[in-house]
Amino acid sequence: MPARPLAAVLLVLALSACSAQAGPAGTGPATAAPTAMDDGAASEEAGPGPDAITAPAAQDSAEATSPAPEPPATAPHSDPAAADVVVNKQRPLQPATFEPADLRPPDVPATSPGVLLGPDTAAAVERMFAAAREDGVGLVIASGYRSYAEQDVTYRHWLDHYGSSADADVVSARPGYSEHQTGLAFDIAQEDGSCTLVACFAGTAAAQWAAEHAAEYGIILRYPLGYHTVTGFFAEPWHFRYVGTDVALGMREAGQLTLEEYFGLPGASSY
Image (spheres, helix red, strand yellow):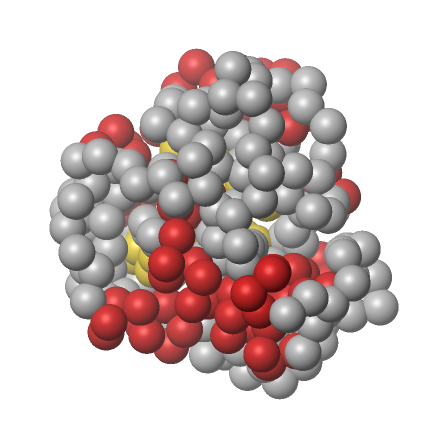
């Protein structure tokens, strides 16, 4: 698997340096801290606020970032290499340090070099971005695969920034719990850079086009507005996830917006 240089790790944090961070569910400014990057990533979450998700009491960094106990590997939707895997605050990756095979850079515009995705995800992204371009909408990829080690760096940054896991858990996934680690998740931006990785991105042409058409390419908006008690994260209009066309179109037909609901899994508002 391609090695990730230190510069790429630092870039994860640099991409999140947006001072106008949105509050819970994109309601307004919450703190002056940068937007988190969860499953990174790019941020998977808005900043702490009065309606923040209930999270565990503060822990020290070593405890907070250690691999969690894993549910049985035979549990449905638990294969980290499968497009239907569900990763959330109650469903860590198995193993926690999972590394996907055959990562490659998608042939699409990117905010920075070195973005990697799994092969099926990369191909779907290429088709989706090309279709958006035909419709006059410029999409740019802002984030893709992040390793366990990179997610650990990101989570520790927010743990140090806020001083407690209760607040850090609202703005970043813990290592081993991030969709970005599967190579199936990615964050998008608009070509002109408008509202990159912040709540106002929802009003851009890029976000609106992707939300409407992503299912046609086997891709879903993973953290829709108003479903944080199900997914564990506040709205992230930039965070998309490859699930395959059967699931994506099935969700659209059923009118269901989260993988948890579609697969009949319990919500995961906290660890």
